[in-house]
Figure (cartoon, rainbow, N blue to C red):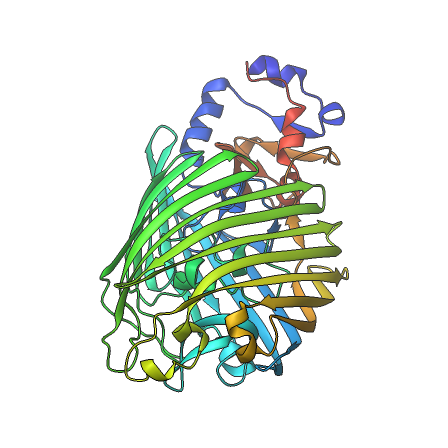
Length: 498
């Protein structure tokens, strides 16, 4: 390593790496990499314990406060939505969520405390906002249909501990009174491919309906490219009081496998058995539901431009019937300013799901008819630069397609919808390192005592970040943030370790 230090020059490399002996460096790496936040791992974190591709951009605010790394994410809309046809509806309201996380080293690993809230119980009126062909949960004792229910006030209250197991393998434990089990892809509020779209997918109850579960514990092991995890959780749908905790027995189970084929592609397979998940019809007891999902998420970033796509298949199986759903959605953002998005969905939904009146011959029985419905959406958002945040304005248009047998119920086989909105989210914090990038000039070291910093610098509180298993220290959080805008490009200029 001494040869490497002799060959490094700050002006030529863009990153000044100050070095001691090889043994000192290796000791520092071994001791400090055990717990420091890995920025690649942070980029892949989705909802709950789910994964995005490593190349995913991060839209968040963050700062270092002593040993704690603090992060905040949010997405908020002030929208007017209108759906047409016989089930015409319109509403002005606000779809929103706010998430915070605090992370620090503890023992050989690190602990993270997470909380997520939504003010939709106060900003969405009635049983939810207009979303033609959406369905799920209850309101006023009836199945919600053609609307998306508001989120609960407390979407996540959870903690996580992560530590090395052996070699590159680590173990993870996650749980709390509100959280998401290991089931399905990243929930839609956290998917890059869905983030600019204010409207929930009509396939929500196949892919991510458990993203607010009141009681969950998840354990898993993972390495750089794979993860295997299982959960015990409360699989019952929340009730219509959106401001409380609907705690219940952890008698539902799920399992999920992740594989990151490349830095841009995340694949998952999952299945679960949800005990008493949904309310029964009439005098029926609550129903168990078996779920299975498969999905692929592809994200590609170039400087401040992003392309993100998710495709998925889901199956919900109950005692006497099963339904399927398919989702494909994509987003293109240019220069963290202009965003175009689209979504295509097909789902088989029961008459009960859609609030379809039973035929006369079935008044006293449970109607198990299913209908295949389709929805197309497209939209555009324009964001303005405003420091750490990006306020924006946008429009979304949609078309809901129903079979001929539902023409009279919906007024037409094709029913258009439109929405306009104001929005705000954090600015892009980190662009993935695919393609060329602007070089940064930052001093960094494996040992904080080796840094040459302004007076008053305390090596014990040096800003740090772990990238690809190596821990780097910096004179300030600002220097660390500059490095993290494109660590791979910066480090690629260094000769290989000797």
